[in-house]
Length: 213
Image (cartoon, helix red, strand yellow):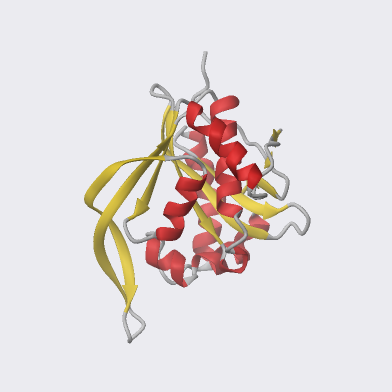
């Protein structure tokens, strides 16, 4: 019988460890989710409190995994153990063998190639260990940083979901306002990964070594 929930695992790359959320992550998670870029491009409530982070760690993430819908992993630096981001799998369909992947990188860790390294390692694990056949990503039309990650790991752009995304803009008064925009839909299939892993290795941003336990 094929599995219909993700295991509780850790995934290692050369520079990163992706692991389940832990109560000790609460303060750093709250700090990361209060960042301007995170507020602009995601639907997390602002301000994002430590209580909200605690609920995420203790209730939301375990419930999503138990129900087979998804998996939340914090991304940490291998050497410093510092939390540098999060990888989230949602809307998993075990019959179709597909899931939707999203990533957030903390403001103190941007520009290091961590999002593509973590997303690539997760995709390799999903296709190899979990036998998934499709990973989908959705990026807001103006979120170029997120789109670059999708391209870097070898995703194919499939089209536009018009008016399907709500982004946020902060006015001079500090109040966030909802703005409607489009989603670009990307997909990654097992055969798409082969070329992109080599390409990332050439740029020094990824070593094709993944270890999960």
